[in-house]
Length: 557
Image 1: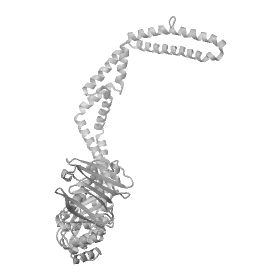
Image 2 (image 1 turned 180 degrees about the vertical axis):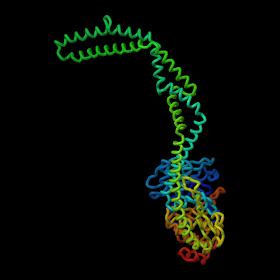
Image 3 (image 1 turned 90 degrees about the vertical axis):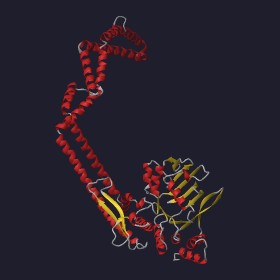
Image 4 (image 1 turned 180 degrees about the horizontal axis):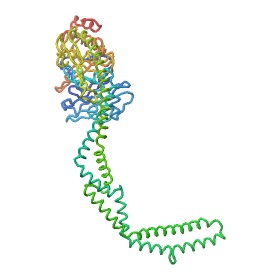
């Protein structure tokens, strides 16, 4: 529910704050007073297009803030989670600031965001409907979603989306396999030759680095052997480390006979040093033996590295990628050798996924068809009350099983016939302006019976009607407002009298040649005078006041 709308320096509005309640709120005023400016401000606040001419003359910027009280489990919570936004105490604050140069900024609960985010959130909170607005219920592109909401098809839609994704993935797998097979068939001769070359090499991941390290070792045999000889001489030759360690150990051992356990750790350390020297000598002997074992190894290492690099150049790759390339070539040959069985398996997966989707889509179509009949009946029950006794409403569902989409196979359109015997056609093409407004209202009432709706804003839904028809429109708005917050801009006294709250919009001089728009909540007396003015014009007579009082008390004027 929209609880507060604060507007500053927007077109003709200098500053105003509206505190709004539940139920039906009516806004009245002379033509040109600025009622539509309020709707423009609210629209900008929920992400609609902003322009520099919306900033009040001589002001630096315009700002609009809308505060909503959000009930638990409202759809906006899902949007907030996806946008990584949060709210506290179920209060959502949307703010839009428009600079005089046309730039704008958007905020959600004082966090900077984009106009697109405002619109995404705002669409779940407010629906603004003008007489000739071709969005919302008058846009065929929205009719399927409206019917699904009415039918509570959330679970069925999830199943259809899931099975569609599985079918689409199976199709992609099959298509990819077909492309791979065609490519493999075109290159079979090359593929077999290249595979044989790589298999002769038997490349291994990481082997090139090992070969290069081995080549470095083998290429420096003389220097390494000399270093080993020098190290061995230092460790075990005359006056070597081994001799010195032995002398140290024996000296400590003699002292230990007199000093007891105190020298034992030192003796252990010296003993370990001797063991380490023996280990070092063993390792050097092993290296020496390996270097002496095969004088031709260096050539073999060089040859293998050359083959790695030669094949890498041939395949425009890196030597380390040859093992992976061989595996890919092998898979290509396997696909050739076993193409029939593999393709049959993928085709079977597509067929199975398509059958699962078709079953889910058929279930969704059946649910939509059932809900459409219920919706048609409910709307038809509203039409006589709205003085459309001769009109008919029908939800048209056209199914095309060959057109699989994530939302099913159905196209949905709301149609109408305003005269008996006339053909049904799109509702926005069939009805006149006043009839459109009443069809829209009938739909809103029908939808509000079973589904939560956002705050509804109607701009002159009573256009083109008067008398008993306007009275009927007012009563239906009043009924609709039992389930949802409704704001109505109206020129009809019958509609204005049905509001739980009544706001008067007026335009006046602001000085320096400027005008300003103000909005005033009306008390009982002011409201009676305002309805009387709507009935009689500028000169309010006692008779007009009496008629206004009758309307406000629920009677006819």
